[in-house]
Amino acid sequence: MSPRYRSANQAGTVIAVIADVMAVILGLWILMYLLDANRANDLVQFVHNTANWLASWSRDLFTFDDAWARVVAGYGLAAVVYLFVGHAIANRIHRH
Image (cartoon, rainbow, N blue to C red):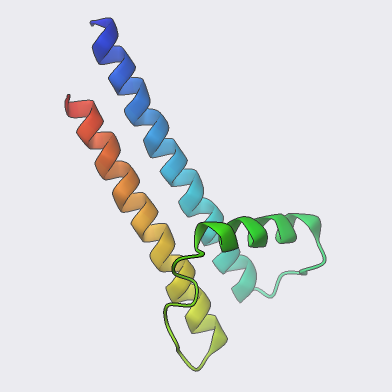
């Protein structure tokens, strides 16, 4: 295995893992919101702030009447996009 191939393989893996972590944070916030987690808790605040930052482009994209639907759609869309794009880039790097 050449060093160049190993480096590209590792870079692709890192990109895929980062995309997965971003999607997990967004999914965790959706779950915390739906289960009405205590917003005064430090972990809940951290996850909420991070999810807000990650989904800043999509969190108010939909205008459903119910707040839970807006949260699921907005943050869920961001999670799916990060997974799709991150894994597509990782697969592209793995092929070269």
